[in-house]
Amino acid sequence: MTSEKIRILITNDDGYHSEGIIALENALSEIGECFVVAPASEMSGASHSLTLARPLRIRQIDAHHWTVDGTPTDCVTLAINQIFTAEKPFDICVSGINHGPNLGDDATYSGTVAGAMEATILGVPGIAFSLVVSRNPDFNESIKVAKQIVKKAIAEGIPEKTLLNVNIPKGEPLGIKITKQGFKDARPIISEHIDPRGKPYFWIGEHRIGFHAEGGTDFEAIDEDYVSITPMRTDLTNYSAIERLKNWEN
Image (cartoon, rainbow, N blue to C red; front, side, top):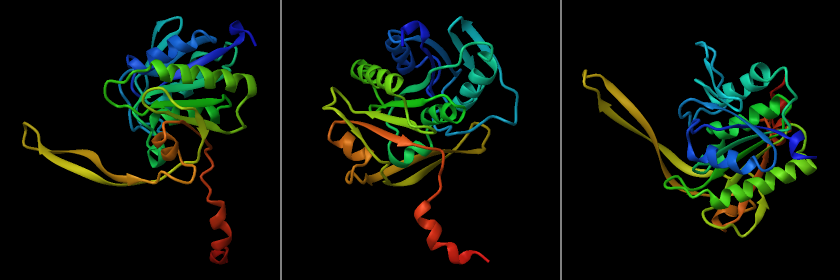
């Protein structure tokens, strides 16, 4: 497949101006023609939310760049079903590179993962990329990983109805591991403050106690300085629990 035939949709949850999405677009432009449709402002933690209670506004920057005042899911939905309906379909949707990890349970909160998930639901293969460094990230190694994985996905395909959640360690990775989603031990921290008008407001944070870095999890791969690729799907069914709960039927 030649680069002229490859069309890549790029989104994220850190916002249109983030360093990660700019680095990703520059890298993937060597593979195919990139089109960026990203949130106008940061939407971290938006998960797979779709804006239904207010109208959305699309702003075209140029022939290859658009912003949406909504979530990553909004961006992908509008890109595929509104902005580019008259053009050739996308070959792949790439979300990221996120500033910080999306490992274990955190993937369920992630707008980065949700962007790739929405594309997968709409029939476009999706990959989410996250660099596990939140402050002062250096994307030099992560864009090499992104190019490698996107090339492989285009050449060999991704299993149907499956998205890839890719987490990249700090520095030069030792290699790539296919992993399963791990679990973290954490509890929320809620900080209460008073605004200038005397009304309370709240910040939600998290105190992380630890994580399970064993048994082939994404945490284990990152802990050992490997890139973690976790295949995910929108089917949340716990199949092992079906038989156990059969006696609830009547």
